[in-house]
Image 1 (tube, rainbow, N blue to C red):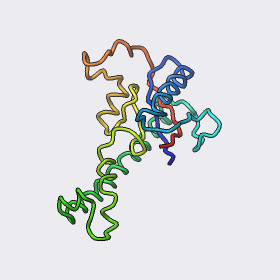
Image 2 (tube, helix red, strand yellow):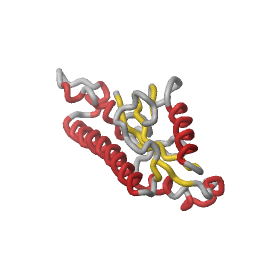
Image 3 (cartoon, one colour):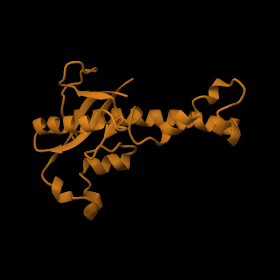
Length: 175
């Protein structure tokens, strides 16, 4: 399946941002349990969606609109899976959920998939990634990534990011 994601990177220029995003995308694709099979930034032939510009300033109008869109996708996927889980937990006992058996009830078949989807930290249900390739799940994490972790002070190498611009780079991924 394909998914649209955004990679938040800290860079001195749009060119550097695109390079860094491609490095992170390469890290996130392939073997060894990586979340994606392959991925392309929007400057590459074969990328779906054709989003322009291929690099956006995260604090600019287009970047903010794109970030809201992707956070909306992540939240929608989470809430959908959570709603289905709630119904299943109310309908079935623990043994039925564990064994995933209740006669021929097809509704129970995807219980573990939906449970995973609500707690997943990367992959098809997560549409934004921070500078460290960690999936962004909520507004607090997004805010921290956008302010380069300044709120956390000594917990991160804030000085390392001083003077860098925050960019978001769209990518087409397969999982």
